[in-house]
Image 1: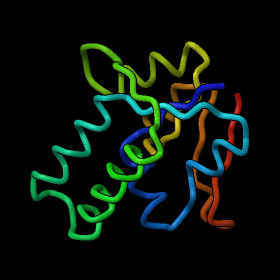
Image 2: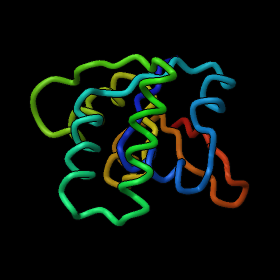
Image 3: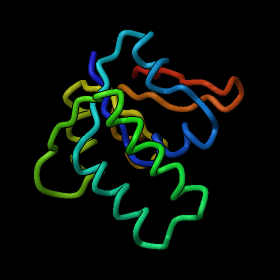
Amino acid sequence: MEVLLDTNFIISCLVKKIDFLGELEEKGFRVKVPREVLDEMKDLKNSGKASHEERTMIGVALELLENKKIKKMKLGGGKVDEKLIEMGKKGIYIATLDNGIKREIPNKVIINNSRKGLEILRS
């Protein structure tokens, strides 16, 4: 099974100190990160719109994804969220906290705040 990571998911997992890569791999997922998500994180880090903690976590995330050699892929033209929804409708799992995306896709990975871990949801 493949899972694509969304920007907010990556940052939130790091802020909450969740080993999302380890948990996803344990559950049998092949983790991929869209290049557009990496670009979104870099833009957010450099824009000044993110808090100091978020900028720090984005730096950690970019380094972590590079060091763990997480496979990168291109979503193609268009808005990142729309492309993630498109991929999700094809059956690929999407790791996101975005309610708009979660409503549209059948298979998702979210953060379960009560146990400080991940939860797999299938519709």
